[in-house]
Length: 355
Ligand SMILES: NC(=O)c1ccc[n+]([C@@H]2O[C@H](COP(=O)([O-])OP(=O)(O)OC[C@H]3O[C@@H](n4cnc5c(N)ncnc54)[C@H](OP(=O)(O)O)[C@@H]3O)[C@@H](O)[C@H]2O)c1
Image (tube, rainbow, N blue to C red; front, side, top):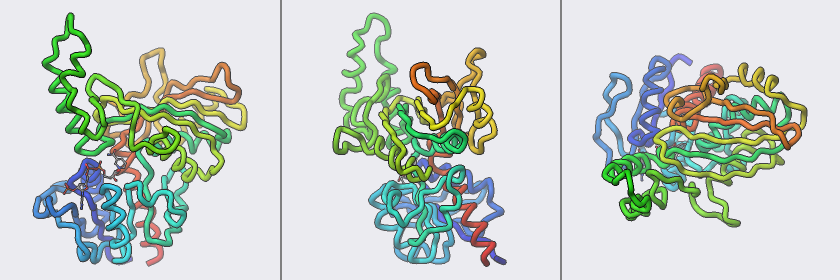
């Protein structure tokens, strides 16, 4: 292809959009025009991609003309409306909302597990999985290939930024409010009194100095939408429709970085040493596992990293062929923007090879 592909960030003003701008700036020479799109509220704002100042355009039927690849970073219902418009205008859409993920005609792509799926996109749409699942996939894909993954039980510790800029701002505002709480001799119920009005936040409960065992909306059987996403999206990406998954998703007062405690069972015998060898060589995985020297994965160390971190790998005592481990991934990087950039690279190479 003689020309460079044009790319759009749709939702460029959001938290994921801001990381998209940073990552695109790092590979600016690969692309032609970079177009920034958001709601009419943001039209006319000037945002930077590296040192290039770009005026944000309002989303609309004509805004996708000439775009080859469109990264969508919008709320579910807004993606549902506009993704088909962008695809009809000729763009390959990489959508991070939940709306198209389980559509059988939309591939759900993570390059460490199923890069070939990006080529088969009958609707012109590729979906990006949710941030919790994406933190797990590089580790699970590698262990599955080596030992045959049969089942997993996951407990998540998810950051406030998983709820977008509103979630991040709500956490910091709550942390500020708790600063005035009397620390010694206090009735710790005071925290609830201070934050008692915080039910309107994206978390549905106070988050500062608290944990909230609800991420997403309620579904049948007492599950949350996030818990079902971990199950269904892991099965789809790994190509394991029978994978047994139990998950409990919890919001914690962390700004960025989703953590997960995983119990995984395999078809074949597994050991810590063998798992270390596999994970050490795995693409997209940083093995961070030297507990005797205080080395283990934590969200505070995951921020901005390309790899997802895995550590605390232990052989299960009471369960055969099973491991326990702790995985941490920056929800805005591999959990969102970075995975989208990696998928776009697969599409770019394909389109340029076919030109
Ligand atoms: N945050 C994460 O960790 C994460 C991880 C994986 C996937 N995702 C998904 O990525 C998407 C974006 O999430 P986010 O966290 O970046 O959200 P966010 O910070 O709330 O940003 C939302 C973006 O959508 C735009 N928008 C909202 N309503 C719109 C409308 N009616 N028309 C056009 N644009 C509109 C906003 O533009 P204005 O500023 O103009 O309102 C903003 O750019 C969501 O689907 C989310 O589920 C998020």
